[in-house]
Image 1: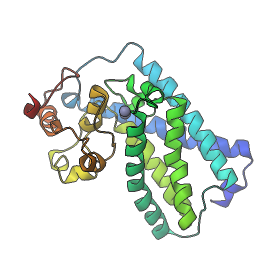
Image 2: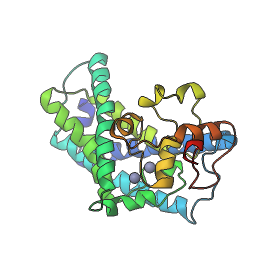
Image 3: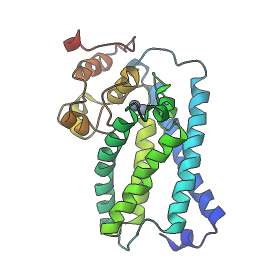
Length: 262
Ligand SMILES: [Zn+2]
Ligand SMILES: [Zn+2]
C-alpha cells in the first residue's frame, strides 16, 4: 500500500476510501444516465420505474457505500491483503487474474442468493425489475457483505499464494464498480459486432442482465456469459431480443420472449 495511505489515521483512511467509492459511483451513475439519454432509441425496456424507485435505489447505494467503506478501510488497516512491490507488470497480472476470478465468484454468490435459504438478502436488488444505473449497487447490507467477499476476500485469498499489486487491486475494484453501475443502465449501447456468441463469452450486451431482473431466473453472471453458458443458465432467446432492441424496438413487457421461445 502506498506510504501516504499507510500513514493516515483510521478516520482519514476511511475518508479516502469513502471518497474513492462515492466519487466513482457518482461518475459511473452520471455516465449511465447520460447513455440512457443519448440513446433513447436503444432503450431495453420501454416501461416505467416503480414509484419512488430512484429514491429506494439511492438508499441501497448508501448501504453499499457504508459496507464497502468499513470493509476496505479495515482490510487495509489490518493488512489482510498481502501487497508486494512491483510495477506495471505486477499490476496487470493482479488485475488480469482478479477480473475473471470475480466472474466465477459472482456467479456462485448470485446463484446461492437465489436459493431459498438466502433469497431474502437478495430481494432488495430485485425490487428493480426495470433497471437504472443506481440499481447496480442497490442492495441489502447482507448482499453487500457478500460482494465484499469478492472485493476483499478473494484478493486476500489470492495474496496468500503470492503478494498482489495494490494498484492492480484498486483497478479491479474500480473496474467492477464502474461496470456494475453502467451495466445496469436501461439502454443497449453494445454494437452488433460485440454481441456475437464468441464475444459474449467475456462481455455481455446490457440486455443480458436486464433479462435477469425481468425474469428472476437465469443469467446469474454479470460481465460475461461464460459461467451461464457452461452451467446451463443462459436464456437462448437473448440474441433475438438484442436484435429487436438494436433495430430500435424496445421491449414493452417484462415477459417479452425472443422468436425462438414464442
Ligand atoms: Zn438475482
Ligand atoms: Zn442486477
